[in-house]
Image (cartoon, rainbow, N blue to C red; front, side):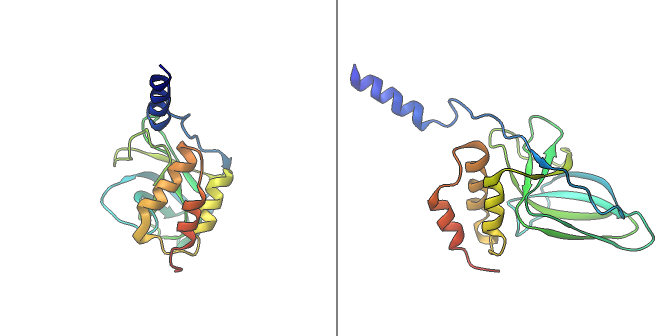
Length: 183
């Protein structure tokens, strides 16, 4: 009988999906674009690649004036899904943007935050912000700031999931990220 109980405990402990964790919800400081930029929309994007994220979003914006407008999307910026069934997204590296006076399409490299939700599709839309206040996500953004992550996007995605859907970064993941080559 003891063996059966022990076996059941081991099975339950090994199964992440048996008791899914509470869904990650974005919290933090609001983020607004430069007032010279008009945001048209943000949607899922499966057509492009970015060396700064396992997934991409397409942000469409334009200059509110008669010239180009510039801004920087900061590391730690979250993109909140408008559908509860779709994952929220996280930008881990700062991204400088330039928009013209007509609609400008920008490809943003991001990571998913809710393993048990759907990966964004083109019909999924997102709200801009907030900038995360989660100390573990901020730590991860600091760890990858000057690292070349393009060849290890899967490992970085797993690190995000460890934070948002599990117990947090392990020392092994921190060491692996620290060992990545510099940009």
